[in-house]
Length: 436
View (cartoon, helix red, strand yellow):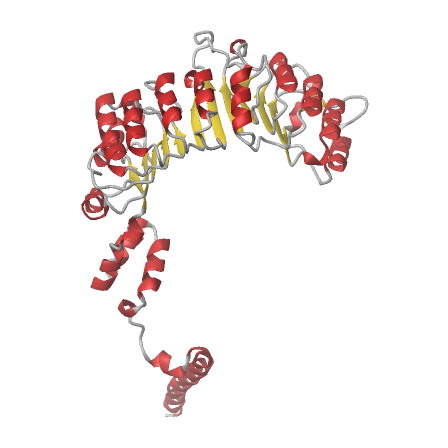
């Protein structure tokens, strides 16, 4: 009986303790929210319209679709046009891609109910032809669209390049004709052609500001010249070197054009010695610079050493240079002599010849240089410190592999970082691996 009585006491104390804790919590929360609110469960369906809309804007698409099934009101908000102005279609084949493909039912729902709401649209596809063709099929159905930004992104080749040119250009023409407000287009590695560009210009010449179309082999210099002649609001342009011409630069320099802000040029060769590169005249560069004095001219080089002969023989107003393959000492010497506007230089490889003289010449002549990166190259510690000393604190980015630096009688690697830090005005160490 004694044990039983003790057991009853213990059992009766537990609820009292729980009730006491609950009362303390109520007092604590009640002081913040109001005690009456705690006795009323939240009605998620009655949240203010703008709150639900804000929640939906932060949710990934899949979660947003699931949330739309909470109640009828949330489903109505799910279809509000503001939520469908920006959309990225992901298209992939499950067996070959890491992309999570947009569900076909959702795609059809978007086409049916929100095609006319889409403004900022991109298609991200894997390397399969099936995914690229699916993207073309969607594009061909956007007949009521008012798209401002369009991007076709291939995560790996060949993708769009394996789609028939007729199928691709037909689908793209639907958007070009119906949008009439395109301002930004990025369509790399596609079968885009000159007739498609003419359709683009005919319907969007007053609105087009940005065009990125590298690796589009069916576009000719005449095709891109058509864009430059009629799209006077063009501010940014990215293209392959083979369609860059003196006529194009002069067209971009006409009085009708706004100032060009960004020109990116990809100089690419797949087979050494198979491509002969033309030379752009200094007068054409000068005309562009006179018209757009603040233009950034970015050049990406993926050439073999013997293919650089056509470049930088005369003064060139390039501002950013990236060399993805080995580049010769002679080429770097020409850069120091003929690229006075250079702001950034990245050299991934050079060989086993110290670049002291070339770097010092670049420091002397390129007064705007603020960023430098060296990969598989060589430079003596003394030469490197002289380069940094001449550039001084304007070098805001300096990425040099440790194995690039050759110790000499004047400087060891241990002393080098102290000297470089002193001239830069901040603590600096060489990199263990490339950061670009």
